[in-house]
Amino acid sequence: MNPSSIQYLPNELKLGSIKGRKVIADFTGGIITSDAGIVLLAELDKKLKITGRFAQCFRDYRDSCYVNYSVHQLLAQRVYGIVLGYEDVNDHDKLRYDPALAIALGKLDFINSTPGILAGKSTINRLEYCPETIINQKQSRYHKIEADSKAIEKAFLEIFLASYKKPPRQIVLDMDVTNDLKN
Image 1 (cartoon, rainbow, N blue to C red):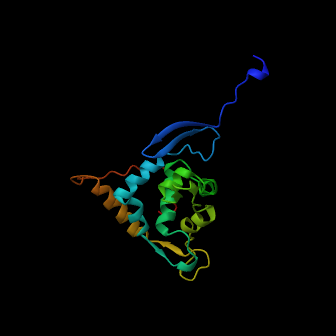
Image 2: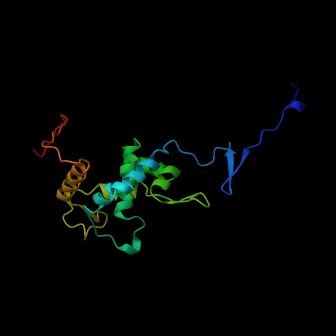
Image 3: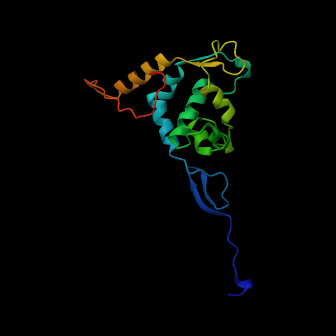
């Protein structure tokens, strides 16, 4: 085959239309993700209200004039990240641009395909890290979100029990051997 006989391959393949919308296969890469399953999980979460109930276990002392993400949005983003296998908070500096996570969190404009920027690691860290030395979150400069551990335990227990038609007679907690210095 000589160079003059090489045919140009287009970057798009037009596959017609469905219900008035064009269907196009685009081979330029564009915005892609390997974590699209989170969209289905987010729908289940919305139905069961797990992250919503979890978020109710926190007190938010932030000034609403400066808040871009609700406690619920931060918790959902963090939980979804963990579910996707991103255990570290610093992973969210890349995940904040992931289109599937943006869809799961309701932050993607479908018309323009413009991803809404999600929270980065610093913002999520403020949610997650609150040292026990911070006595008054309301007055703290950085740690203004306070978890109520008893409310979290109660909410998770209620969510678990609600998953049964009839609550189990006994619940066995299989704990690992990690040292717990508090006991």
